[in-house]
Each structure stands twice: as C-alpha cells, then as structure tokens.
Amino acid sequence: MSTVHVSSKGQVVLPRDVRKRYGIKQGTRLEVIDSGRGTIVLVPVPADPLAALDGMLAGGESTAESIAEARRLDAQRDAGRP
Image (cartoon, rainbow, N blue to C red; front, side):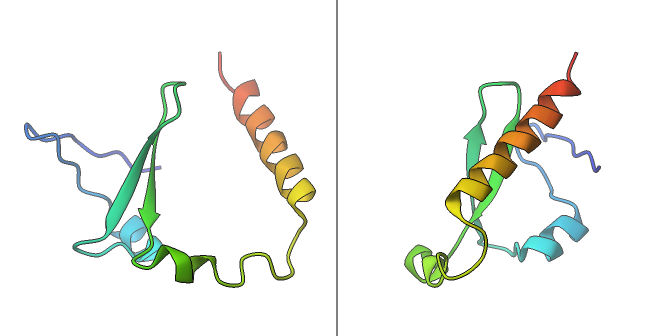
C-alpha cells in the first residue's frame, strides 16, 4: 500500500506503479467517489466511455455471480474494521 501527501493546493501525486498499472497519464480524467464510509475511490474515466463498454457483457461471469462476489468482498472488508 502506498501513501501520498496532499499539497497546499489539494493535489496528490499517484505512485508510478499505480499510474502504469491503470494507464494513467497526463490529462487522464479520474472520477472521485466518496463512499460515505470514510473512503475515497479514484476511478479512471475512459476517453471514449461508449467504446469502453463494447463487449462488456460477452462471456465472463453472470451478473448474479458478480453481485455475490462484490458482497463477499464487502463483508470481508467490513469484518476487518473495528
């Protein structure tokens, strides 16, 4: 896990390995999501959101499986909190 510092202008620098892993370059837009539980999530916004959806539903796990997995991960994360 990496930590970053917030500048006086409210800016942060993402670690190089994170930028590389997610293809974040200068000009990349990030969506800031406040989970409401003390967590902030940064999600890269694709340059062409419609193109990013192409093939999203082909193959892979079902929606029900995805929801079950998300709930399992949420339960694990919540169990680790005081």
